[in-house]
Length: 349
Image (tube, rainbow, N blue to C red; front, side):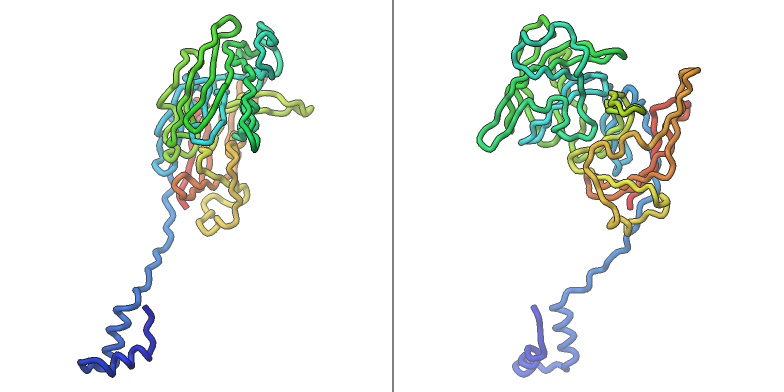
């Protein structure tokens, strides 16, 4: 309600009681205007360090910045395929952390596929997280009029250091808001059997073990309770001659649900503040942190490698709770000198 002096004058002339004008003004103004809202100063958080307890070479660790903890972790080999869990999702991925790869046959005719393991054209998901770059991309095609299931057969194989060995064949048949339908068999002599995966609105993915043909629970925490995944994964590196070469790396991937990141390689870590956020461009690319925060020097004579942290790189992270953090890597080794145990430092802006 807004009072003017006209309102005051009318109230004064018709009031049954006589008050001094200043007293009346004080009563009206104090009763009708809200008190000024107190704006508290923005107080940044303390710098916190964290050391990964389980090796990135053997374990996937889901990390939460807000609690500075790992709400869930799993051994690399516990799952093979992951299915996008949200309604409307159709993304299916392969577990390159355990050296699994996919041979996309491009056909639904089983007899057209060589019984022996193909030696070329094995792929894995691109670490950017783009569904169109998934090893299973093309299993379903959406048009304005229809949903087309190609029913292509994909071979699943494990890399043994030299080549992939086909173990399983899979054929995806259907997806809707409730789940997925697919069939699977041992390759090449097994019998086809159908399986169903139910979706969930609280997880990014549902995981499936192709060896025992079971859904695996307890892999990924609820989507809003973690920010970063410390893991091994497949990537494409380029030789000095520009030849793309599959390679397995250890790095950090984003929670694709809500986390975004900007990279600052100019500012001093301690000097970055909340006020600087407007100058950053944030990205949803899953591997924007990746593995480039470390360098490696290989001694071919002794067949050893020494990892060092690249100085001057700060990651500005918006987490699943909409808080902003600055984070940097301190080491790639634990107190025992074992590699694969990153130490990070971060603080809330």
